[in-house]
Length: 437
Ligand code: AMP
Ligand code: GLY
Image 1 (cartoon, protein in one colour):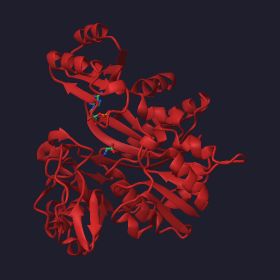
Image 2 (cartoon, protein in one colour):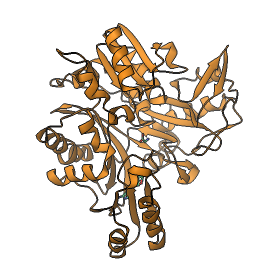
Image 3 (cartoon, helix red, strand yellow):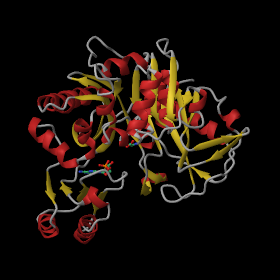
Image 4 (tube, protein in one colour):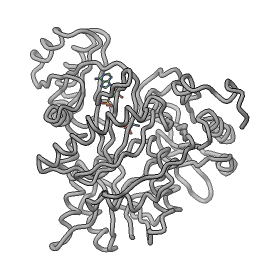
């Protein structure tokens, strides 16, 4: 199979690493790719947002499958354009069409679909009028959750402890803070509990559960500081028991798939459910129509099955009979970001020690924002390096990731030193149980 992978971050590096191991792969192309990815496939200089450019190059090369990493090209209709690539048929695409990508791109659409199939999610109100939004807020109690309806680069959510803060968020958002993405807002019930990210492969009518991970969204130790795309994660997630998975599949994923098909917008690709789990009861916070980053990277480290036929079966509408084998090991990831992230950062710092860092047992390093030139590696983004590790226990996987980081020489980088704290609190460490390695 000739495969074109769209994207160029850590998520795509991990997907390419896994796809490149497939005996079914004849050639991998990546657009636009980047450092690290260029060792796994041929890079093509087309932006992920250039829908017609990606379709043209896919036709020219004779690609059998396009795998889309980020959500923006899907929101822009890349899957639709690939479906219609030729008069007598399309090019298989792993990722939903625009109408199904609305599960991520419109919070009110997601809520409407959940309401139609009784999937558990926070109760909400939807507003474009300030006075109505503020009157609604005043009838509720803290904490308040105010969200831009559309895509706002992960910054469209305010959790306010006071009414004044919540009213301010309403004013800002309806005042145009996120442009068209916040011309409508959603005000919703605050969900208590522990968060987890769960992923399922979907072929339009069937869903095959992948696995869950827990992500650390805040920039600094102790879950302090600004929200980021994710500073580290681990899988499996102790909070996500088989019973919880069962509930998520039967109450959320399967009914939503059925409802989407009923509406004539069947969902194919990976469905990412951001969940709040409270005493074993899952509630949906949000859907994403792509893999999470960094979560995807540790799922790829844990998956023993060949990923490529699974992606192709999902894209071609036939996951019947498919199954997935997972390693019994735990996987963890620690993200190294440039100082200042998630705000503006300096680019161009030289990074040393990577060769030594990659020799630590169980470690794979995936690149997010890296530039390589004439044998020199430089930081070139906010999130820069992803240090993943697998081991028999989460504790050991984390020790390996941190041992690898010790060997990296990059004074301008930072990382969290407490990845996995929640899970380690609920699972005794090797030292505590007295078990040997
Ligand atoms: P989102 O951009 O929708 O992922 O929201 C960002 C973060 O806000 C989530 O990861 C949650 O931690 C939090 N959040 C969003 N909605 C709620 C809610 N209804 N209740 C509690 N926390 C929420
Ligand atoms: N790590 C969270 C996300 O990818 O949205």
